[in-house]
Amino acid sequence: AQSVSQHNHHVILSEAASLELGCNYSYGGTVNLFWYVQYPGQHLQLLLKYFSGDPLVKGIKGFEAEFIKSKFSFNLRKPSVQWSDTAEYFCAVNLKGSQGNLIFGKGTKLSVKP
Amino acid sequence: NAGVMQNPRHLVRRRGQEARLRCSPMKGHSHVYWYRQLPEEGLKFMVYLQKENIIDESGMPKERFSAEFPKEGPSILRIQQVVRGDSAAYFCASSPFGAGDTDTQYFGPGTRLTVL
Image 1 (tube, each protein chain N blue to C red):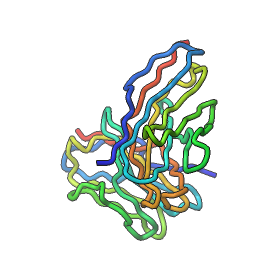
Image 2: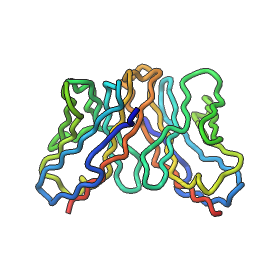
Image 3: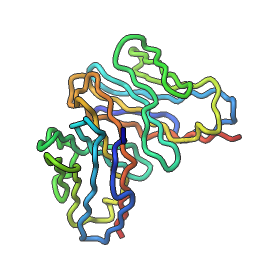
């Protein structure tokens, strides 16, 4: 079955620490990949997306993600986190040529200590 | 340009009542997706609609749940005879093209349904 796995349920970091959140997917075809962020009390916002081309994708607020096709992975990174990055992060995938419905991971809660 | 709007933001129903959740897509978007998020779970796809058409309802429970997106007005997700297991956050997303290749979905704030 198609699925998306996010390895960490809850990550706690101090400000200025580097961040890497794992995301692996299980899909037979060619995929589009997304990271969404949900700040406390707010709706999901698109952080970055990959459709094709350069596998290193830069998003908003200093985030980036790298698509490694051989590993079926799309890990999210940020070199130096801030307290304001405290949020829940969701990886999502859809299949190219599909109707577009997204398959989401369970999410990773990031807590950044000031 | 207003984003995706959902109302109500919070809805409390007793078992057996009906719940109606509304979603107004972004201006210019004619494709709407509904997702459900159970506690400690990721979002799960329920249904995909275009104006006046249900395109994919493969994620929708077979009974009690229905969705529509009329020519005029918001998309409605309707849950009849709610049960405690329906308590969840329901998110709506809209997109301009509805194509899996290059499209991006923009999410509303969600409706948190609590069934007593």
